[in-house]
Length: 414
Figure 1 (spheres, helix red, strand yellow):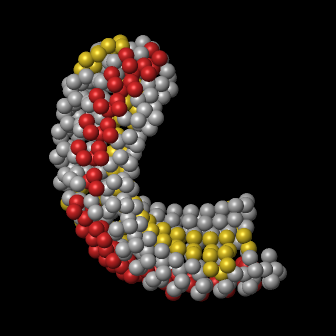
Figure 2 (cartoon, rainbow, N blue to C red):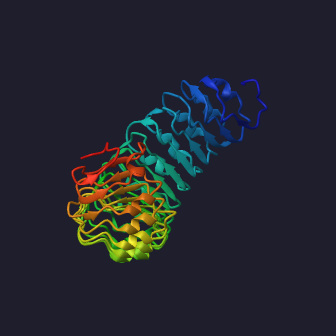
Figure 3 (cartoon, rainbow, N blue to C red):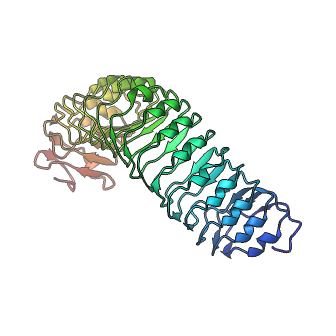
């Protein structure tokens, strides 16, 4: 390889190359443009000689079996606009030398075994548009210098050990479209500066230690938002009134928090909503019948709250081709199991367990749920017979109270 000194382009990605990457790569100083070694089985270290290839602008070592650190000599590649070292077993700290790459627009170091914090130096390239640091074993706080990246559109740093608060300097990033800080140890409140992210499409904050209430006035102004995920925190207050203003929302995940109050019936006006996950809160009141207007809905999980009243018969009006999971377990729901549920022939999960006051006969219409994979009726006062076509199918997970329910082929008693 080192003898091909006139070589101008080199693409060897998506192969089965293995072994130590040749240091002779440094002799190919006429290489320019894109240089990709991703999706192979290279081992050993990334050669420092890569720093001699000063004409390249796109470099990827992703999806290999390297060990060792990112060579500091990459900081010599002054024309570099894109650097990707994803899932390559790289360790050590992020080189501060990357901060001198003034043309860098894309940096991805996800899924490695890095150590240390996010160096402020890598937040210097003001042309940076995408910064991906997910599952990289990073710790420390998010530097306030993040506000320098005026062109930043995507910032992903989930599944690390980042601490501290979400810096208010994020509010300076007016072109931000995707932010993912889930699975860290962040605390404090969701900052009101999110109201500045008028282009935001995705906001992922789940799995932290965030507290306080959602900044509803600012949040409901994000008209382009499609994903709001803030589950598994310690958030309080109520679900935002006026949330129907988020007319592009496809997923609302606020599970495992301390939300109180009722479910706003106006959620039924978000016709694009495909996933509504509110389980594990302290929500009261009844299930709004207006939810039947969510014709794109596939997943509804309201379990482990304090909901009362009956299951609205209107649930049966949800799109039978879309709706897959109905999870209402461990509430205070009463009344009967609506026969209208039998219309939802794409339903895969029906879980009403732990609602003791849910009573009456199991409707024969559930026999039409031909795609059912999970049926949980235990902890209720339902009676009658589970259709044999369901209970004798060993592929269906099921639990019922066999002292109340006749269950042929019974194997899921509680």
